[in-house]
Each structure stands twice: as C-alpha cells, then as structure tokens.
Length: 277
Image (cartoon, rainbow, N blue to C red):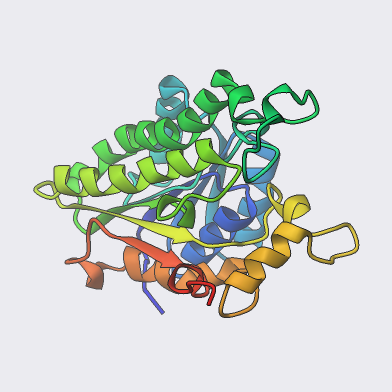
C-alpha cells in the first residue's frame, strides 16, 4: 500500500463514481483530499464518507471551465489543507449532440429526421465535449500546479480513455477529446519535466457509471446490444469496477514512480489487445 501521508490530493469530478472512488483510495493511503465537483452535494457525499472512515476530506464546488472559480477554490483548499501534491483531472464527459444515432452511415440517413447522422452533429455539442474534457483538464492544471512548484514528488494524473487509442463508433467528439487528453499528457509531462512535476494518464476501458449505464445495461440489469458487443470484445468478460483503478492510481502517485512520466496506462480488461478473432 502506498503511503501518501501528508500529501494533499485535489480530485476534480470527485463526486462521480470513478473519481469518488479515487478520492477514497487516496484518503485511505493517507492523503488529505479536496473533492471538487460542480455539484456540491455530490462532493459532500464523498467527503463525508472519507471523514466518517477516519480520513480527512474537504468538499468544494467549482466549474472546471471557469478559471476564476478554480482559483477561489484553490485558495480555500490551500488555507484548509495546504498546497496540492497530487492533482487528479477527473472532470469530463460526453454530450448527446456530439453523438450519432448509428455506428455506420447509410445513404438516406441524411434525410431521416428521426436520426442524428454525421451531418446533424451539432457544433455546440461538440464544443461542449472538447471544452469539458480538454479545457477542463488544462485549466485546473494551470491553477493547482503553481503550488506544486515549491514542493517535491508532485504529480498530475489525467483521465484519458480507450477511445483515445481507437475511436469508438457513434461518439466522435468524446473520442477526439480524449485523444487530446492523451496528447496533452505527453506534452505537459515534457513541459514540466524540469520543474519536478510528473504527468501521466489513466485510460479506463468500460466501467459502468451514471453516464453510460443506460447505454450498456437495461433496467433489469441485462446487457443492451452495445453492452453485449463490449463484453464480447473484452477478454476478461466483464465491465471494470471502480476499484480496478486503485493499483494504477496509487502506483502513479507514489514517489517510488519518480521516473515514470508522460505515459497513458490502459486499464481495460484486455479490450485493446483483442482483435475479435
């Protein structure tokens, strides 16, 4: 088990299923955790669970697309917990207006009013996805790394996706935005290499979250057609569980990983290794 005692971890998107679990994992390892989420109630739920378990956590609300909001939150976090040693850029997501109805375009789809074809993709929806994922990673990095400059053994962990390696059908905006996260991770790792800040990313495969649950499973728990397709393509034969991210998270945060920077780690049950044959 990694020892993160006296470390301060900031987790954006910390009210969600995956990042909430990350926040708890970091707290269990000894870190003081700032749970940052647009929805204060969601952040408070995670922070309360950490505090009730004997850890130390602070819940704060911030918009990762608003630099001023982030700076105000940073000041509050630093006054109560201290400057960040670890930043988890977990805020992100997709938007229906950046998603096609069908995986493959067929002639005639462009005039079918019941479908969202490639030609119907909405620029505002795509802009939202890119802003939320890319700017929602860049801006917190700008705000919270300033406090890291005077410390040692600091790191940033971005959240990429298996979509970044090979894009999934139907979700071009999300796939492209996560590819940008992987690229930015490498860029930022090089940029901060002389400042002592390591930058890496985790690329989860298919984990059930509030955002994708209805796409992958039915109300009775059975798999949808897309969910079945994913499981068939995943050699381990299941969706990821939130705690499946723990070991990689702790490895990347641990000071013993001081020579690891600029990588994107797939955590996908073998999905990317399997050709389907």
